Image (cartoon, rainbow, N blue to C red; front, top):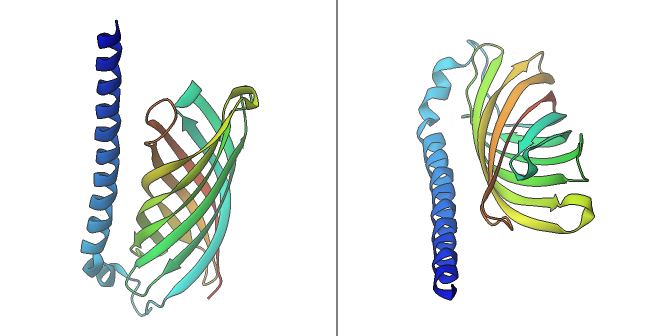
Length: 198
């Protein structure tokens, strides 16, 4: 019996390391891909409009599927995008999935990472890779934990004018490799608006 438990524990530890390694590898590949696409931004920019560094802030509503308990949580997201003239930038986001709870399960995430976009007329498709922390509240407030998150995603913004744009859709896939009961994943959608600070 002890030998069987030891083998099971050993297998779970190896599985955790493998999943964590895969998450890190995906994140690194995403960053390399984003860096390699640098030259494409000049080909699709709107004619007669020179690109400049910019800082945007925005917010929106999110719907996420969380693997633990198969929860579908709804919440608010705030984000900041710092973009360079060549389409490479950084995005930081906070997300509070507090609504549509079952048994008081909810989560907050705080992520930052590289972002790459191109401009196609008024549309701005982008991809991103992020890393950060997530706070998870277990059923009936029994426990709360803070965990590493590795995430990737992308979306499309639509520019209304020089100052305002609409985040039509942002899709994000998250891996929580150090979650208490083994690696947990979550995936969700966000839509909202952005305001250009400068």
